[in-house]
Image 1 (tube, helix red, strand yellow):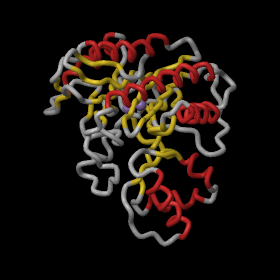
Image 2 (cartoon, helix red, strand yellow):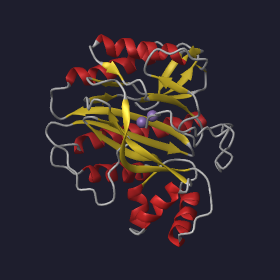
Image 3 (cartoon, protein in one colour):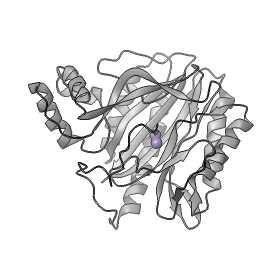
Length: 319
Ligand code: MN
Ligand code: MN
C-alpha cells in the first residue's frame, strides 16, 4: 500500500497502538525474509489468475487465503486498482466487478510474519498498449534500489524516481509515496517521495523500506474518490449503536494496527455495513478513500520492500 500523507500512524505517537513493541526481535531478518518469500510465491500465482472475465473478488480472496495457507498473515487487504485508480481499491463484499481486456491492473500485496511486513506491487497490462508506462515505474524502482547507499536522504531517492519516470515521458505521482515500516506498522512516519524533495529524513542500515513509484500519463497527482473499502483502527471512543460497539471490539482485537477490509468485516455479519460507517463518523476508524488520478490518466505502479544493509538495498519481495 502507499502513503498519501493524510494520516500519521507513527506508532511512537499513537498511544492506542497495542502492538507498539520495540524492534528487538532477534529473528527480524528471518521473519522478514520468509514474509518476502510468501509474497513472491503468492504474487506469481495471482498473476496467472488476472484475465479478462475473472472477478477481482476471487483474486483478492485467493491472495489473502494463500498468504495464510503458506504460513503468513495478511498485512493489508489485497489492493487491485485498475486504470486511473492508482491505489486503495479492494473488492467489497459481494463485488461482481471483472477484469476487462483493456485494463491496466495494479496488484499490491502485503504479507507479514509476527509484524514484519513485505509490501510489494506490480502492474499487469491486459491491453498490451501501456508497455512503456509499465516500464517507467519498473525502471524507476530498479534505479532507486540500485542507487541506495546508506545513509541516504529520502529526497534524493525521490529525485532518482522522478528522473527515471520523466525519462520515459511520463509523470511520477507526487502525492503518493513509499514508506519506512516497523513491526506491525505500515508507515513509520518517514515517507519515500516519488519526486525530488528537500527532506530532513534519511534511511539507514537496518531500515525496512517500501519503495513504490507510480507513473502516469495524466496530471501526476491523485485525488480522493468517494469509495472506501479499506479501514484502519484509530482509537476507542464512545459509540451508541450496539452493533457498532460489537464491531469496534472485534476490530480492536483482530486489527489493532494493520488495515482491514470491508469484505472481511461483512463476511462476519453483513449488518456491519452501517456499523462501519458509524465507527468512521465517530473517529474510531479511518476509511482509506480509493485514490484516483486527477486527470483520469492511466497509472502504473511498481513496489518492492527492501532491507537497507551496509552494501545497499536488499530486495525482500523477490526470491
Ligand atoms: Mn507500500
Ligand atoms: Mn503496497
